[in-house]
Image (cartoon, rainbow, N blue to C red; front, side, top):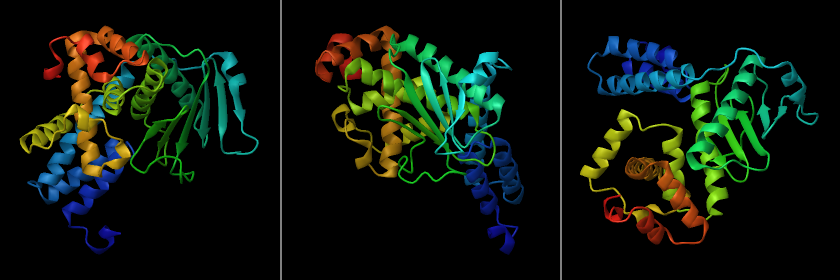
Length: 303
């Protein structure tokens, strides 16, 4: 709409690029940012967004390229796919340890790739935390571009775990597999933490571990943390253990980043074996402070 009135405003193209970034369409995002930079080569907003989107594009493309996805499913895979009689746009896949609900349907090869990513998530995250669910896991994925998601998840969330894994994305094309894969890893971590600690896990540890296992922090996220430290706006561990819903958008952003940075530091110090021990202590009812002291003796003050 803005371009109808004036095609010479660089920030309109920069904002279109941000919209494409939010649906994981990196090529279109960079295309519009390049136009913005032609109009205003020194635009700090456009330069910042281009650096951020370029890093995201490299990461999400690389994690998929490193996975050996089989091009064609086994013959029995077709028998696991069913159309929901009550929701004709929704398909169900019952495949081993998970039951997948997908709305609307995607191309057959995309569906097979999604199932392979879930299988890899089960193996990799399960190995990190030494936990493999004994019951079938329910996973729902909704494309909000085509299906109403009112009440499905908080507006700011791409996924949630509440006994079921719920994910959403928004695009008029096939889902971006790299982004979807990190969401699987994030919410699967929540699932395993719930099993291991019986719900007795601090919010910051739960989210920080899910974020760290899902993906590393990007450069722009580390910069935000550095700025928050300069502004003295980082929280103590006690203040971090606060429900996310009580935070503002800006507070929530730093909360996630700080939680992930703390957990990444814990993994650097003791590896995933220490994380497994910590979660086990919490599952046995030990308070977080005592569990940290036992798992990281002499290091708690520096975490």
